[in-house]
Image (cartoon, rainbow, N blue to C red):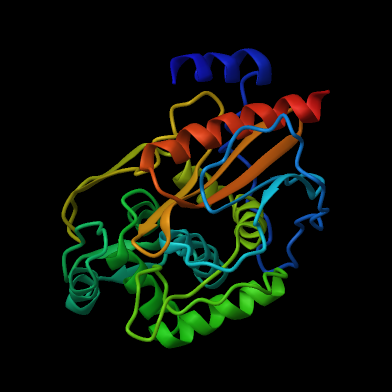
Length: 295
């Protein structure tokens, strides 16, 4: 792993982590470049997962593709869409009151949580960290319930947004990616890369997704919280997020990104059987992709 990190630094340079961008008008049409398919280079790193996709989000050019159009469950990568839809409907300063049903939902579903406490009142901007870092299903439920209004209404907004982004092989059934008795939602590596590229245009999502640890001090509205990211790619030179996921059906998943010389590379890995290998593969793909674009 150390050698791979050194190679990323030496051959691809230091990807710039930018968190001070001006807030764009999110209500406008998305500016993601159209995806242009290419045949994967034979020099590309080995990918063990079921599906993968790497693209230059600046141009829409596909750099690597493995079964990228195959529909499959995506687990907590779902929460990227949750964050994106919330910020199209709410201001970061808006306040959400946590209810017992939010906490109970996460516990009943066996999902990861942000350990939210019923009665706490937390701003949307802070809840984003609870959603993205520990992958809190309780945070996802609270946000969806509030900005649907109601979870069913929110999921409808998620699917409508997917269609607006051209994600025609995606169907969401909840705001967190947990399995349901009615079946799982699904997406593709390519659709999730399109979403990742668009979501990272929002500086609030980009900042939260690139944060390794976030603390929230107690006040009259809520107790203190400390959330640590599940994304072990963070800390690698240049890595800027984005989201991890896991269920038995989906396997280990990862959406990731990095920047260099005006190019933002965005990738997605689905259906990996070894948790740590998704981070190693993402790191190798970023390095390989940066070399390829610089050639």
